[in-house]
Length: 341
Image 1 (cartoon, rainbow, N blue to C red):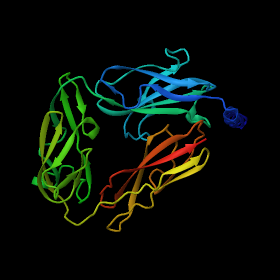
Image 2: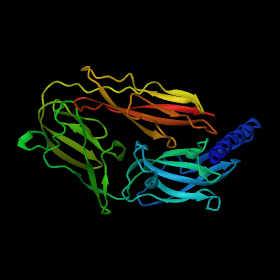
Image 3: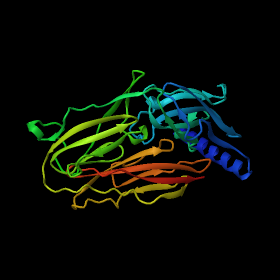
Image 4: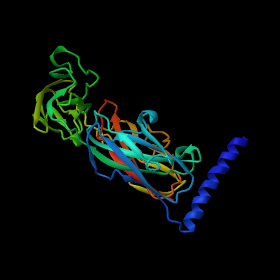
């Protein structure tokens, strides 16, 4: 009990200290100075990182995390995403160098999170962080495109073979695994559009495909999917033989953007989501921007969290995907929550 009270008092004093600093109009900042947003780096290259950290008291370490552009932070293990821990003795202070993974391609998010007084900000009242989106481009030629599936790709009972038979309803989706073989000997995942890949369905009454290679089953039959990236083209024959009972995919609605003050209780509102066929829905919230925060009830229509105390205005982004009782998924939609000091 004593330790709990002491920790609570420490947090309150930390917040009061920042309020006093702000009230005294002391200039301070915590922002990623290098790399700059939208910078382009090569796979396997060392990337310099540096912070603009001015008059910010109590910072002992800065943790840097590496995420895909829209990767769900709530699923990812923090330890696996940590790429650098920097201190005031680092060169430059609280910065350093990060090795871009050899297999990287496309857009990524570099997140810097401050640690104060020996405790990371996620365990404190203050969330001190900054993030930038950068692009990774291999210094190698794309030699070929492949699909990590059976060929042809069969859904349901097509050809008497039950492949991906869990997808046996109209409207269900499937993330097509697309890879590229490069001249440096590295195989890279190139499904998402930010890697340069484009898609074309030969028959949209059988399957449709979005810009990130997510197939949606629209009807029975055969079609050919054409995939392009750089100067390479590949095709995949797709056979669909599933339950023809009509089923329209659900529609997700993540609610309106919100602007709240630190410490407020925030409710993400997905109640506007619906199934055109009138069925019930399953909900799945994910976080794709901001420092990682505890999200309560991420599988309900209304997920909740406590807005962290921030020293400056910061944006947290969440996405919502819903699934109907027959397994059809909506396309994800996002909503921003801006937290103010």
